[in-house]
Image (tube, rainbow, N blue to C red; front, side):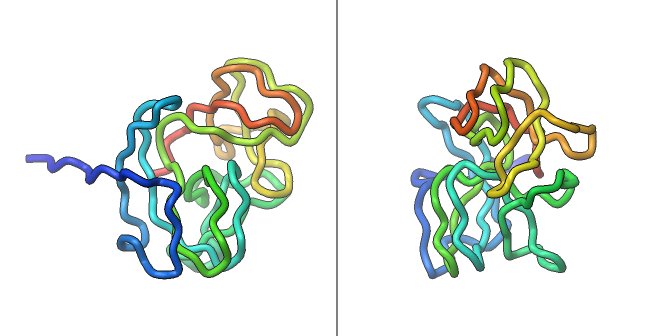
Length: 154
């Protein structure tokens, strides 16, 4: 029998103490984005809201913001929905729909996106199968947060 995933009531919660085992997956039903899966991570540096985070080199615990270059999707841990302070544990979305900030000019609806900007933000330039974060569900203006259906980061 397949057991259910534990429900997460406060996905924006952060703490300097571990809230769950690092890597644990929890479900959440967001009023805007619908059903989401979240992963527990640790941030050695402050992580901005609505950015893609990747595993730090050689780690499956610590995450850092994705850099300016496109990131291989196998390194992606999820997308922050709020700020995670340095030295804290927090939750990142790893499946479902969520808000992500666009760094480039307006991105159209139903367009695959990848990380290319500082802060782990997205654009639609030079997207390849191996770097796709997800697909936009509406147009996103430059510097705005828009809805993206994630390519599962499980």
